[in-house]
Image 1: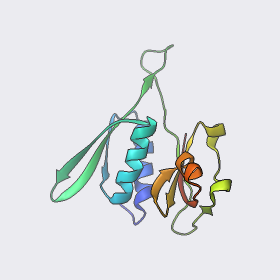
Image 2: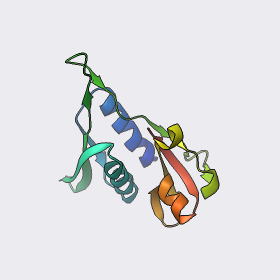
Image 3: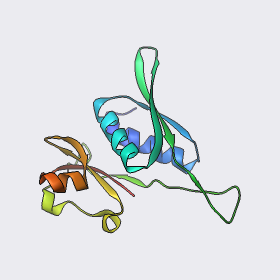
Image 4: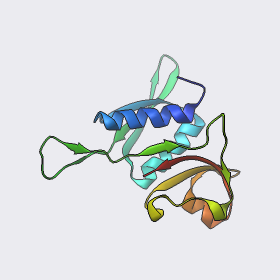
Length: 136
């Protein structure tokens, strides 16, 4: 685990999705709980549950996979995640310049003064913030 918890969450989910794992365990922090709530609400993951082990809290995520119709054994990766703002280079945006991913099909997760939210919520509330990651 590094000092960048958001990058750790994104990398864990991306690696598990790439290797067709159905369950991922990530460290439970306030930021990770907010990001996981957004992923659950947007339909990128199926289920979340809290797990406590050795006085440390973890979030156990159940990923959503879809079978390819042509072949029985192959799966299609549903998650593409990209970290944008990082500790060495913070990226901020006002609500008018929040990027649209795949013409609105993807999700941008922002950290605003009112908490962590999606790009749609930030545009509706007319607030900008730090662009954490893209999901499509």
